[in-house]
Image (tube, rainbow, N blue to C red; front, top):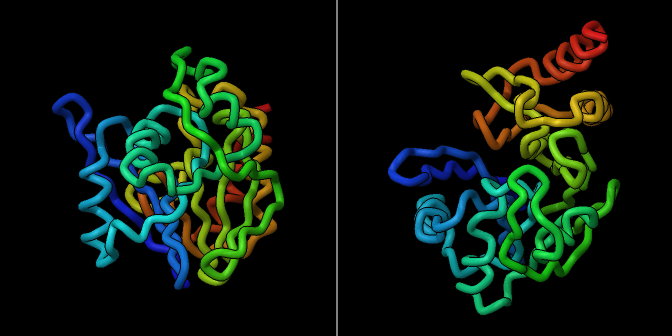
Length: 223
């Protein structure tokens, strides 16, 4: 039962685009969190196998939110596994992932994917020793983060970022509801977090609680 950071060095039209996904693994399941931009199936496959895990073990994909750099390769992954990989996402994300309404930021219609499990705030998934779903809106209304108590690790999606190993706030220009985003950061303070895997910036292990407190406090000071 473990949580593995997964660095994805993607190709965005000939330009490097690096993101940090994650894998939850136990005896029965291999769960990928987020899928990067479109067209990255082989890069994801190689990254998983470089972690010493057979790609064919993939059973589930959790999507933290609807942005295209998180859902881009989702349809390819689902197709590659013949629809046998189950997709999990927050209930507010479902119409976007199913292609029923345009994505909020791009206005595009995403290729339709069936969401097998609709997640809510406070849900606890039994996989990998337990995964708690935390609704962390602000960056998008459907955004979730995932807390893994057994490793004291948070998979933050875009609710937080990192710079040179230092935990940072979400990126303002891509976070339309800043007040909600800062409330989401404050919400994380109740958890015993020692490590954060941020999608943009990577893994942080130093001064996590202090940085969460500072980020939340700075938002209140700006009011």
